Image 1 (cartoon, one colour):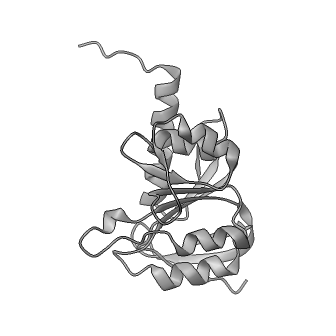
Image 2 (cartoon, helix red, strand yellow):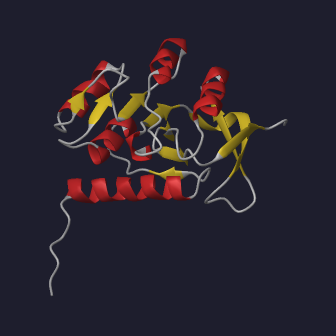
Length: 183
């Protein structure tokens, strides 16, 4: 039986989806997105459709995401959040993100946050998908983010997070515990 070949855009969406899936399956490992396009927009085009909603404070990303057919929503109602930079002003939006409910934990928001991977503060991850522990370094993530995440992530409630640095991503599911590395 012959299988039709992927179009270039289908292949890009498939490769992006696989990187996102593996990043949450193995937290703390770095995965690579396809090289074409703006990474946050590429993730949005892969994840969003007519049934979903998004929030972003960035006009360029918002314009790209609008083409998916997904609905732009205020931070409190959006399923997906895209932050190219996480600063003090954007932290206010995170306070409003859904953490799901015990009946519907899948109603939690997914965050896509731009940062630098491999430099900056070190974090030790423990939990599902990690054998023992995994250490990552992230720069550009305010300390208040970690405090807020610690306060709201009570599995099965919380956010799933993708940290994005150009074409590299690291996944952090809500089930993983994070502690600041002393080194």
